[in-house]
Every structure is written in C-alpha cells, then in structure tokens.
Length: 300
Image (cartoon, rainbow, N blue to C red):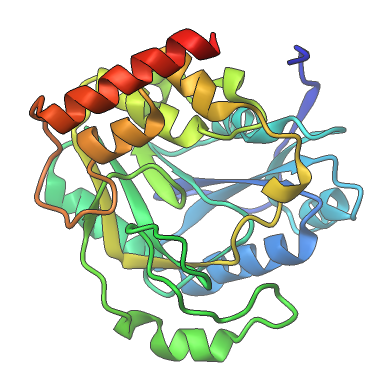
C-alpha cells in the first residue's frame, strides 16, 4: 500500500463549545446530504451540549464550504485520507474528556446521548468503551444491531416521522462487545492506545483493532447501550473506496482473527452480562486459534 503523509488543515469554527460533554468526531467523504441529516439529528436530539468536529475528505461536492459556513470545527484534506487519519486529526481539536465517533450516514435518535452519559455515570469509573445501538434496514446477521427495520436508504426516501414514532419501541437489551460507531471513550484512553491505527487506512477493521488495543490496555467494559439508538443508512462510502486487507492486517498484528476476538473476547452481540473476561480455552476456541495461526502463516 502506498505510504504518504496526509496534508490536513485544521480550522476552528464559530460555534460555542463551552460546557460540552462530548467531542463528536464525524469523518465525511463527499456525502453532504447524509452529513447534513446527521448533524441536524445531533442538534435536534441531543439532551446535552456537545462539541461537533467534522473531517472533510476532498469535499468536492461542496461539503467544505457548507461546514465552514455553518461554523463547525473541522479538519480537511484535499484527498480522501480515510477514517483513521481523519479521526486522529479531529481528536487533536477536541476540548472535552469524552471522545465520541459517529459516521455521517447515521441519524441519531432522541436521547441517544443521555443514554450513554447515564451509563457512564452509573459505571463510576473511566475504563470503558461504549457503543450506541444501530437500527438498520437490512438483515446481515449482526446481533449487535436492530434489523431489519427499513426507514429508507437515503435522505431522499428517509421516513423520519415513522422512525421517530417507533424507534424506542423496537425490542433490544444492552449487548456486549462495543466496537462500531456511534461510540464513546474517555479521551485519556484514546490517547493511551494511540487512537485509530493508521496502518488500517482507509479504515476497514480499524474498529476491532481499536477495541483490541483497549483490551490490551486493561479495559474490560465493552457495552452496547440499547437505549442509545441511531438509524444507519448502511455503508454509503465503503463501496467507493479501495479497501485495505483489514482482516489479514488484524491477523498479522494480533495473531488471531478479528472474528475470533469479537466472538470469544468481546462476545459482540450477546446480551450484556457485565464486564468481559478472558475466555475459557475450550476446544472450539483452541481450534479457532489454530486456524488463525495456519491462516497467518500461509497468508504472510
């Protein structure tokens, strides 16, 4: 993969971030209608004040001018530098002790932030990684999401009123295994593990890698908060990008597959039963670890 030093610019906006609880990082790549809807949902549906920071990748669709005109703190690059460089750049502009990360193709539902902040207050410590819960239009077998519940595939056909009328009634309990956005982590933990790993640029598998780095740092509270909900239009940018071989990178880095880590260590998608623990080395797990070692050897 070609290595480069991304040229990123940093801009303070005109919005007052005083008293903000979280700094919300949102990378965007020529996706202005989705970004506008995402930002509108944050403004309408947040209980607390938050600092919002946008990274504009390329911005040839007018995103950069729109973000500047509306006073948002933002970083920008003339080409797409991927999500890892983007979120790390935005983090350097954050002013709060909590770093949240959301994608621009997400619509945050009423009370999304209050549910996360309440969960943080109840924990009483700062060794956690929490995710909100996605409502998605298609069934993919993702046990961490509420699916399939189709409220539209774009801002043009988005059935906003129907979502707002029924999102809170969709059954879901807290789940284990936070990796994906929307998520929140203490800023000092973000810095301790070095943020998102840029070797995963443009970003595939950087999410479980970040969770694995937190695990290695001693974090065990990986919870998906069911009451914090966001509608996800689903992968509106990943189909346009040249993908990195993320699964092989994760395996080469950590010596096990991301699937094994998420299933046995994080128990991702299972009902939340408290902090994660080291898994018992059952026959099934030993077999998965052996398969990973073989795959790693022959894919090197």
